Image 1 (cartoon, rainbow, N blue to C red):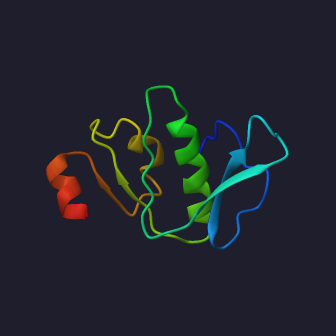
Image 2: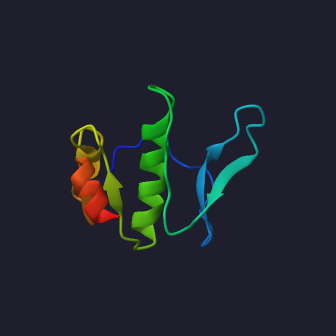
Length: 98
């Protein structure tokens, strides 16, 4: 089981990932469309890990493969190593994975 910083409120649909609730409007769900690729970027301490955990949990539930690129040597990816289909920790590995 993945340790989650928070749990999503609503159930994901087959065509979107539920990320949580909007801060300004707590009853409004925030989601992003599912696609073949999803890139999560942001400043340090901006919540990337929480978003990752939420999306990965939903991907596991629907049986999706998870490819994870972590150019900090696997620092973040090690939390999910038991569920990753493939991973890349260097630029060379990322190029090969893509």
